[in-house]
Length: 329
Image (tube, rainbow, N blue to C red):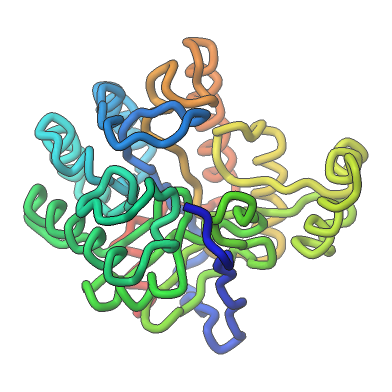
């Protein structure tokens, strides 16, 4: 389903920006898109509900817990309704800091009243988006005994009604905005002019994933990067010459050297909360383009080892969702 007019969230005003307490310092958080396995290159199919990669989740959680890192586990309908996955995640949140959140994959989430399989939930009619979100929220509350407080749209697919719907269901935080990225080509939202600072959108606090522009021309940011997209090989040329690179803080297709440089830039420019992320199927080889074999998995964990060491060296501590909400007041 391709939207006739792709959603472009308005840039927040200065008054909407979150002002973190001084005592909060500079912190980081880790969001995990905990989801079913599917072929990322193939058309979406409602029958893809396999969750075999969840067997690798306890080991991943142990690695993060050993570093005192909480995981915000953003789960979708196949995970929330799979008893084995629920049991695994119930043990994860026993660490007292990790938390279960909501991730809506509209194509595998009932009710299925749409005419076509839909990638972006924000493209749905408001009533259907609301129905899918309520179904998933209730499933999570039933599985884990408490209502989720944080949301992420699958494929970052929020729409013009999403924040209002989240507020009506009691959510506190959204983390669907991916600054510097534009998904209009296949009907998704356009975040190309957003930055990584948290802001208040109608009572919902938006915690964007962290994207950082690095290089000598980084002050040009999203505007320059967007313009380079209209120049043949422009983005590649600027990246190779050290002028401008778009770096997302994720081990998935992002070299650790670039990510460490991005942390340095973000910290130097005063970003107070770094939001890192990955997808749970990457924990087992063969389910995502980023971890195809055992060597890729070793590189995945080596990325996190280096990243967590650098954050520790800089004195950037992990923040749980409870700590973030407390700091928001």
